[in-house]
Image 1 (cartoon, rainbow, N blue to C red):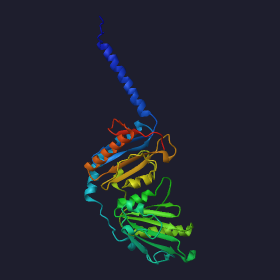
Image 2 (cartoon, rainbow, N blue to C red):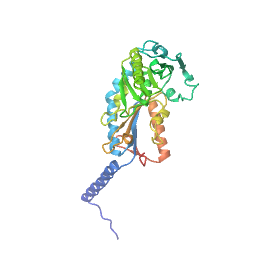
Image 3 (cartoon, rainbow, N blue to C red):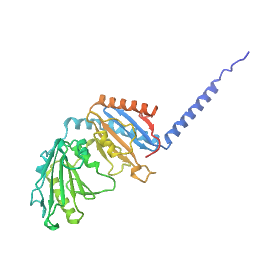
Length: 347
């Protein structure tokens, strides 16, 4: 007859302790594993997360920080959504174009023209898709010349009515990048190549110099200051930006988007599966530098998407989770409750 030994209380405790240590070491190893980690979570009307994080531990720390920001700022954001922003300047873009004689030496080289609705750029090879995805409503443009440079068109002014300050801010920030040059014109304006761009109120202004010369650049800045002075709305940023973590944020990397098309124009190395933006959501993102990374292009991306209500966010989150299951077959659930996915090789 064979007898099976009955385990003692001591041996059971040793076994339990051993399994705990093994399981704990596995979690630590997983959290410190280098990779290309994605994390996505949903809370009330928000879906938020991280792309291209080096470790699961770092990504979960970021998720918890964003969640805390959402909890702390929810009342303020709800109030801003209820009251809305009172715009002080709502005139059509053509009324903001400076008349001849308002700028020293610079005059119109042709009659101003306008576009509205779906007619934008139909008569030229320029694509209007970027403007449409940010809520374009109407545009006015004119070219400027000066006798100082031979009385030929040298500056193109375009003023876009984007409907809301968030849309104008979004298309402006689409063009920004770290370490770029800025000029104060009554609002923060970016200088890049032949272009000067800024947003104020519901307007996005783009000024192009056809040639590079100090006098032309000075004319562009003077033109920007004239227009900014006419727009009485104070320079401001969308309040939703307060939800982003502040530490290690890469200056000039903040983006705002309202569609998946715009999101993939901003970031070309996103995972195959990302939350689908429906029901007029508002998304923001920024890059966050890791101490081991020297190139800001390698920095992880933190994103926050605000949907119209909680059911809309829950629906988008369920679709995302199901899509991940179909593509990868599995995912982890972190301590924060977020879905964790190691996307494989970093971009």
